[in-house]
Image 1 (tube, one colour):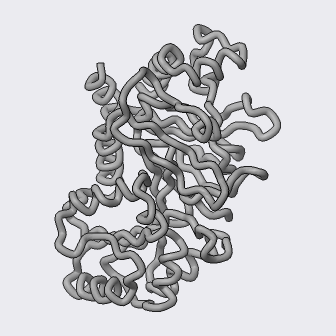
Image 2: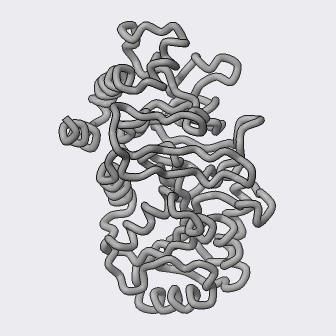
Length: 326
């Protein structure tokens, strides 16, 4: 059944999305004690749920206090959110790391082409201090897959990083510099340089190192420092096994096995597939946890399925990987 799930998820097309989402909903209702209890508490009858708008979306905070697992298994990994000092971190219990790897590799290639064509540079100092970051796991695998001699993590070695990027630029090597926001800003201040073959991708997160700033301000600083037209962004969460990518202007696009919906702030059960609201995310790769997540991110959903993140819901934790408010 496991290979069957993988095949269904990663070969999905738009027409078959809702059918598979409903199939996974019923699988998770029957095999996930936390999700079943949540659904039952809402007095929902699973047999009456016939569209993705009616599916119950598990509040993301459940990952802080409960083991959200579909079927019983010995996990291959447990990813934890970065959180902030004193906060309770979310835990994503992962049955099969190969599902995560298939998801992020297919996702990357969908938007950027073969990872083998890139030199991958990771500037993620705060995440490297922990050994259970899903972001670090992903970037490390991308580094391995790129098979480029200069690919790797560059902690606070900004001078070394600048020399590496200069050499890569001189050789016109396609390069991806993916970094946490505060580190990219530090690097931009110390070593601004015009870039032609390098993509700058921010993953969000000041980690208390700098003041929070709106996305336009952040991207403006980075665009000026590196003489680039666009700053790319990655939208990911510990509780998900897939990512959304933005090639500029904070407009995110999704792989075929993900979908974003919006719910009303006053009525969380009013779910729509366009407009502004709080983001609900379907990640079909979350087969063995929960594929239906009610986030704390306010956003806007466009008619073509792309979305923007507009901020955080009042009272929610500031997340290390969440996008900056606009």
